Image (cartoon, rainbow over all chains, first blue to last red; front, side, top):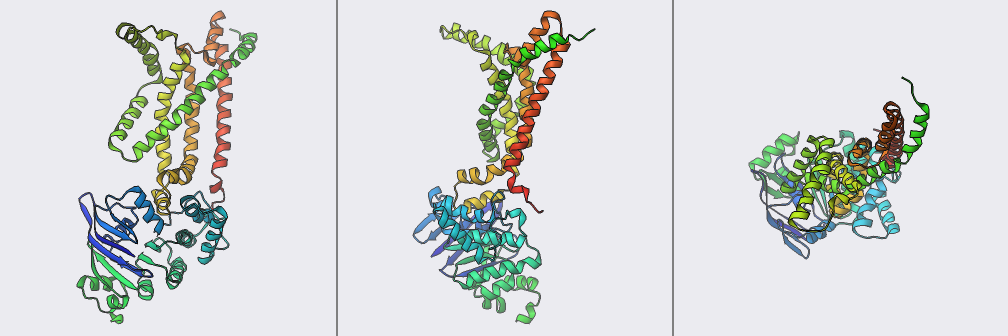
Length: 250
Length: 237
């Protein structure tokens, strides 16, 4: 369904991505792990052109394009097939929770207003915010804001959901509510690419785990393979540092 | 020395005729400057190398010279040069000195206000986190829609206090229009005062009028600010 090949990206003289490949099938839950600075967020952002890659290609259903020379029309088509959940939510501060969700439907996809509102309410209900339709982002807690962010993403019924460290900006006690929403989506068959540091999420729901370091994919496999029998030394080192009781997992 | 109250009352009513001119100078200048300044602010923000540099150069030139000097250049020097060009080089029958001085006033004040507003808009646009623009693009809005629906409504709110300042400063500097023979509040007062040397009285009268006008502008901005920031009103944190 989605295949990205040979992605290169440099910020100035800093080569962040050095040829990353990723293939995504419908229903895949792909978790990208890696130390900070490994380029995982940058890679995720090149998929929907929030970051323009220097080199690489993308195949998305019938769309095929070079990443660095895609036309605005192609970019917009790909953006409409994907949805992005940001680390710091990035909700529209001048819109209510409901308006945040309807915006992409009414303005970008020309869905009739009533239908859009119904869609948006369904999405907000799904993330457990049926009591908060008319609240502004500033009136919501971090966890609630991120759940609005997720509702905004799922309301447009995207082919792929992209999550960029969705729980990293949250208080520990609020992480659970966001993760459980994400797990629910995974169970319902959504296709997701998730950059995260939540190892439990990776172990529980990932259909594939990708470990990135230094701008390349070091290792890729099922959650079980990566967590119990990593082939690469760098993967093992990373897991040892991050997973507290890693030794017991083996 | 006695204050001539009869003169003051007379001048007050004479000067009222100048209020439309002052308001016209202020608000038409603002209207002319708004779109240009907004476009220039975007040039600076989008890090377009050449146009951004030109805008920066322009802004620092205008901010670095007094308005009086700009008026002297534009109103005294420019017509003379243009006249020479038209008469001697192009050989055209056009009297440059017959142009309504209001036009010169609009040009000078707009050149100035554009520079001020460019900075106002730039700082206002910067107050909206870049992430919201990204989020808007990510859900499929194009850049224009993202600016109109998400960024600008929020930027306006933070721009309003500075816009109010700029408007008041502009209104006060239109009093320099008398140098260009425009008959605004100040010009009328000066003419009246010159008959019997009642300058103090005339200046007192127009001070009151300027204070009233500026207060009205401020009240107007307070109302607009309240309207636009409704999304912040219930803020809990």
